[in-house]
Image (cartoon, rainbow over all chains, first blue to last red; front, side):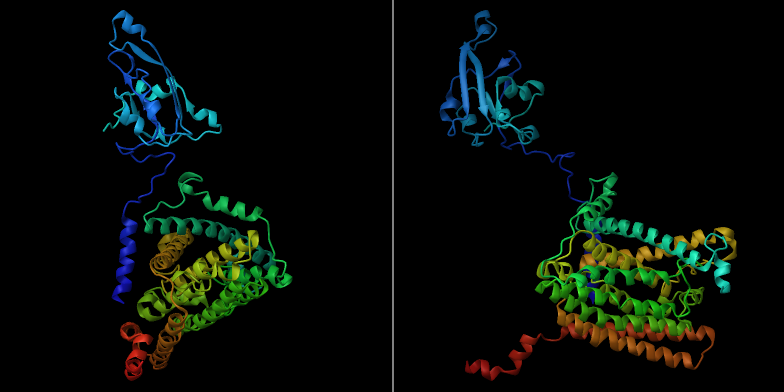
Length: 153
Length: 391
């Protein structure tokens, strides 16, 4: 009999507690700093250009070959504004193929690429696979817009 | 025309008896549908909060339109009938299960002088009618040609018939104290003290038996989603399922809650329901009183359902036949002995309160003893030590 009353009390106390539900599409749980969504390129705000020099290290290391990188001479280096003699020309990452292994981040010599640790790295569903192939501008939008803090090992 | 009809009218308008009854019925039907829709929402929210969820939130503000959307979906869904089903039994079963539930509502006085009809044998009528849905469940289970449906139907028949008896005894104990079977009379006799104080044991019995009658959670083996995948209703879909399950169950919940409020919590009478200082607004206060009491009972039942796990069939039957039924009979007998000597007014209430509370304690002690009993396996092991040693 006591157990019956005690269990009624237990349900009442859980009722008084705050619900743990998060109303997902309108409300987002905070993503962890080490969250590993998809790779993005980082923006060098001091010189106003990407960190990436197009060295192909990530492209060679990528186990699923989802990256395409081309390099060009940096016009700012000729002017003396930048120490980077070469800079990225075109960069494509196929998010549909990427397996989020983090190897590109680990091999990068310039800390120019990082895993997206915001919700924008997760909500990527699209109706066409072609939309999942991101070009240089799209890869840089996030780091250009807000100064994000990628978690780098 | 009987005088009380002329006194009541519907909105003070003089009407033909049949027209009057028709208008009252329509009001009941409309109010009932709205109450059922909101009760489903309330239950989902309440149980959600108990499980630390939010419940429905998307459709409409805070999910208030969720039940309306569900009802619309169910009404437009295809009405399936298995090829091997017994056609007429299958198609009529939902109505047999659900019409009696509505019929009980006709005898319930919701306010002073406002019900569809005030029957002199109102309590008797309700008790008689509330046993009929069992036939609907049996029909549904048999006609579905499905072993789960049949199992569920037989279980529900066993359970509903068993728990009908303690329910009747609890209602009878109250009717004895009130001295009438007319629900209006029973409510009027509670102007000073509600019967839950004079008769706590019948109140507890009624609460338990109501949960069982409605096949709610601690007593839901007839439905048992996880073992019988829905009991008698496995093969039903669309409008038939919604009539039987949603309307029947929640209308029954509301009806029994109002009945409990009328019998034990003083209905629209206590406290000060018919006092003169309300003037012409007394009906409003009475409506608030009766709906608050009914809602308290409904929330209590939802709370109990959300807390306890399903009982085994033998525990269920043992609880009814070995505990509720004997104590119900004891209460009726004691009431008879007390009332036949016609003690003076204050003393009568005191004796009734004392005997019923003593019975509540006795029942609690008996349940305590029963839970302390060794299980069957332990008893068998103790009875045959030699045999197990030989093996």
